[in-house]
Amino acid sequence: MKSCLLLLALMLGFGHHSRGQLLLKNATIIDGDAGVKPRIGSVLIREGIIEKMIYDGVLPSDKLTVIDCTGQFITPGLMDAHVHLATVNMGDQKGAHMKTDSILQNMIRHGITSVRDMAGDAIFLAEYKRKIATDQLIGPDIFYAAQFAGPGYFAEMKGSSRADKDLGTTPWYRAITPETDLKLAVAEAKGAGASGIKVYADLTKKQIAAITREAHAQGIQVWSHGTVFPAKPADGIAAGVNSLSHAADLCFQQMKGDTLGFHEAWQQLYKKGFTLDTVVQVKLLQGMQQAGIFLDPTIFHASNNKMWNALTITRLAHRIGVKIVTGTDWIYPEKNEAVPLQDEMELLVSKCGFSPAEAIQSATMNSATVTGLHDRGLVRAGKCADLLITNENPYTNLATLFTPAIVIKRGKCVNSL
View 1 (cartoon, one colour):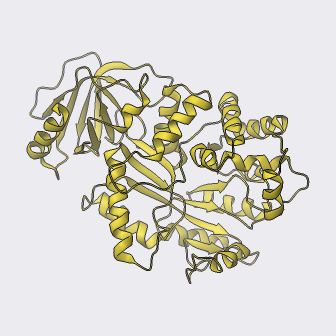
View 2 (view 1 turned 45 degrees about the vertical axis):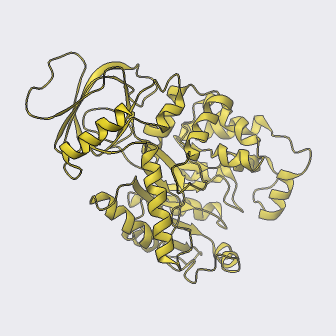
View 3 (view 1 turned 135 degrees about the vertical axis):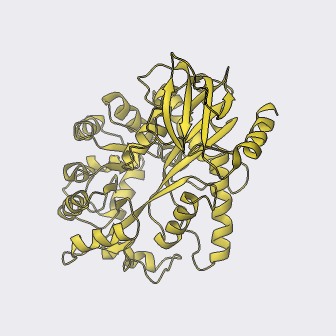
């Protein structure tokens, strides 16, 4: 109750639409990098940016708003690095907006200040990105992908319940053939606001390598499925993609042959008696670690689908030193309900050998870096002031991150439970 009343007073006095100057005083600072020990200090924020960290020194005396955080903790805002906000029914725009508005508000309420959307309608996503950036709407900052896949994949999708007429023909849903002008395709994806290319399905290892080269040449990321049938996981690593999604997909590396048939491979994976070859996995994960490729394991999603090998692979990846990010690829609630990112982080700790500090790094610094962002994910001078103030120590109670006393978005106190 005390924190809610404080937040209300701050929003009324500080100005909901003003970023101004804010001092967060005497908190225990959790940096976001698991290798940095928490310290008691203060955070000076000006115009939405952390101007200064004050650990040993005189606090500024000029006119600014002060929040006394004695006994509280400050962490970076959280990031879900694998969501899908724009794959709802785009034919019902009013319904889609109502649903998305509620989801985004619930994300902020639970401490999520940024998301990486892994393929959806770019027109819809760009509208939300702009509204959030210009303070017309409170929500996490949105960074999204353009989906590149082979024509066979899009033909199959058109025959399914999601029968968008433009699948495969837009800058954000692009069918790639040997004749595709990749320079133009990537440029058009960038023009649609995409921060990265999602390499999805029905592509050869040669095509994955060509897409990756062109995307990197144009300054955007490449986020690949763990397995891009018929290509295998090692092909994405050889291409130098920025991340692989779905730890369970890495199981397919041990299957015989240089290429994979989609249906046959999945049947083999779920066949009774399938045994994970950890020797193959270690070699694959060592390649990821050496290439600096992030793993987006989506272990909550995998667990819900009884793909238990994902937990083993993530545990091995962590031990080998592969950088892990927190993506859920799961449905977000519209009401004030618990969010799947909490489940993802708790599984990292309970099943995959992570310390709470390492799970927090995965959801902050790592998830920002894999998205190509260097302005957030850490509580340091020069970073965006997307911060959480919690009443309990997240290192001893990870769940406190999802019931923050105050959420600060670009220097503004925006929400409370």
